[in-house]
Length: 325
Picture 1 (tube, one colour):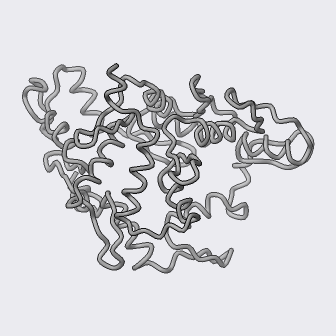
Picture 2: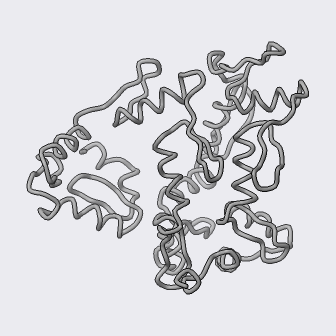
Picture 3: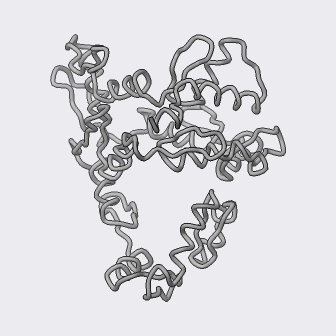
């Protein structure tokens, strides 16, 4: 905890709990967390972080978060819980990792915890309303980000170029990538990158940097090997003429892999998509819509762009009065 208190990540967070040295991006999340340090949460107290627990079992489980770590024997990766380490092992080191499929939209993942979070997004009864404008959101996280658009005083501005950010970590990453660090360079490929993250993705995706053991999926018709079932399916379709087997239940369009079908469903048929107010095309993320708006000659400031994106979201966002009826 002392080492964490000296870390740059902890120092950059806007809201801090000094009792257990944890940082938070939103004040209401910190307030909810501080309830754990109140005796109303229980009668048993942790000697390390002073958090209260309601029972001996819960205190024992809490103490494990301070004292126990799980280490992967294959790569040395460390995780705080056994479940997270098992998911790491399945997705990284196991051939044919088990997939969980959402019956509502076809979303697939090898992580049970990811599927549990995803399923909650389909529960219409759990939508959260903005108290200032009435817009509805399917998670508290997206609602918190939205509410910061109403309070411009909480935005973080880059002193060099004036760009604004919601999270301190995003501002720090921007400053490092654009205004400070210029040396993210791959010697073997003679390619420069703007950020450490882009360089890391390059090492992960470029074939010349991949370990041979990561190519676990072999084509049955040629010697080619691939790193995932989706890339293998695409190869078999494009190189060997195999028919596309994954059909969209809405428009019946065919795809070579479940990942491609999932991306299509998310981008074309999701009820949460954002529509362009000029040509009515739909997009899954506001950043993609912002790039699309430039094709219409939109050269707005960041403030005008945020307003235009919000107006576009209102086209698809149901009104509270309609939901009540």
